[in-house]
Length: 301
Image 1: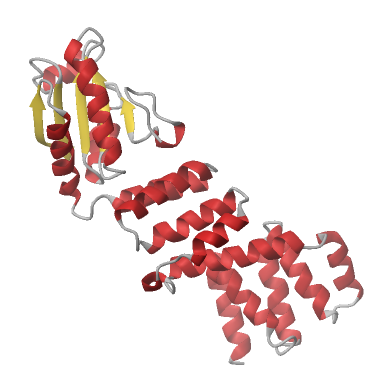
Image 2 (image 1 turned 60 degrees about the vertical axis):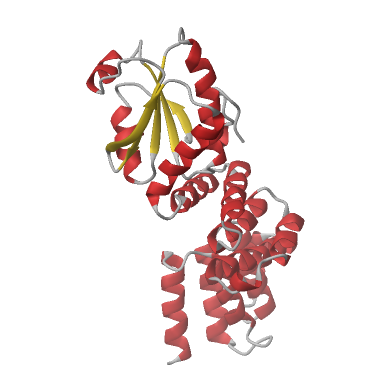
């Protein structure tokens, strides 16, 4: 996922980055309120910096998202170096909750760097996994499923029974179009988290992905329902096709209509499909809230 000395793979660009005086507040002070940030003050002409930098990056990488690293070229950012009283380089500071809390000057052996990074990472209390999960979720939202899968997997390396990370890996494989891998991974879910909401969501998304592969053309199914509104199978198939096309709210409406018309059709298939869709979405998704409310009103009418 990472390479040494600033050549990180794109998915992890936010974990180790260069910063400037203009972005120092955002990259260091504000970020450190969520996850510890290690700041490496260096210069291109500094021999020890060329050794320390890659070694420090390797230690930060090994922490798997529990700490971030920012690099500052003191020649290009002399004001910040002066404000923090950098007397020599390399100098390394650690920031947490907006304040410098630890640091050292000069090069250190790899074993000492690892201890330093672990000590800083532990400041976050929960190991920084929450921050890593947020990063992975953002990657997935932005379309970087490969990077998200790597971060989720790294979190599982630290906490094998983390349901959010487990469900995230499954969803990332689905986003990559690898249904078989998603199913294989889900089959190995630890029993302790098998019924966690995040795992149930991943299970529901796998089911919807299977249905999507078999979905018929939306236009043809819409025509069939328009011709015969009591063609329950056509309406159900239309809901599946709409969901596969990303028109989830419309799919829910069709299923609600089917439930209203024939709630016991096909052993309550409309209600069962609604719950699959609801499980696949976040609990507070407006589609879920509206759909559950309407379904409840029909059930208890």
